Amino acid sequence: MKWYTYICVSIVCVAGLVPSDVFSATIYPVSVSGAGVGGEGIVRIMIDTEGERLNAISGTVTISESVDVPSVFIGQSALVLWVDQPRPGNTISFSGITPGGFSGVRELFSVVVSPQAYDRVSVSLNQVEARKNDADGSVVPVRTQMFSFWPSVGGTTTLSVEDTVPPESFSLVIGQDPSIFDGDRFVSFATSDKGTGVVRYEWASTLILDPRADAWTPAQSPIRLRGSDLFMRIHVRAVDGLGNTTASSIVYPYYYITIVFGGILIVLVLCALFFVQRYLSRRSS
Image 1: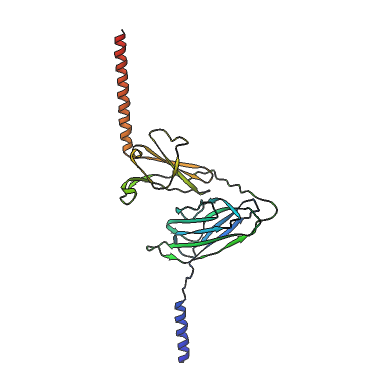
Image 2: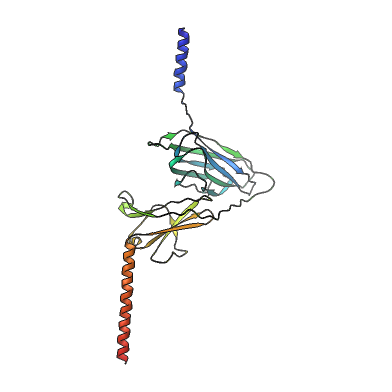
């Protein structure tokens, strides 16, 4: 029976050397609408966590150079906060996190593709990394799949995307940390949009009135606050893929000092004008 024992032990040892979860997640592209030459279609970048709970994903999507990529939509993404938000282009880098993690089959983002020639279109994923929602942020082995298709024949289609709902309401938070901006105060913010996704943030500062249309400038959270910013009202607005906006504002306590002193100054000026006018009217009489 020795030979039987040796065989059993060998099988157990070899089995112990084979990883039980060589791949713990799969990321893959999938087409949900075809596109002819000059038309548009959508490719969704999907993930199957295969039972794991993940909280961070990063990587690069590469699309054939014969294709224009006019838009990227993140409204349905499993990722809540973007470290590197995907942008239109033939090479799309992305990195995002979801506090608390997510699991199951989920969308990461959608890409609008427009073939410019009748040539095979390929979509591949590279340098993909996923991390578990655990105390160590353990790296999860990821399998990636390539996707390819030929443009359809017999007409073109231009996507008609409808999104009339603005991004979700959000609040601004003013903070201060010695390790950020040399200890200067900053304002942080974040929101989401379930339609075409938030494509950018803009900010402006005013004393009393709302910002002018040309006063908004591009922003990323957090925004460093300097000098006069602490005496102003800070406005931030989120803009989705079709231009719908949601705005929020906040003031630092110095703002109220500005308003009080401004009010006192106006009263003093008015009083001075009153007494000057009264003095001049008496001299003239």
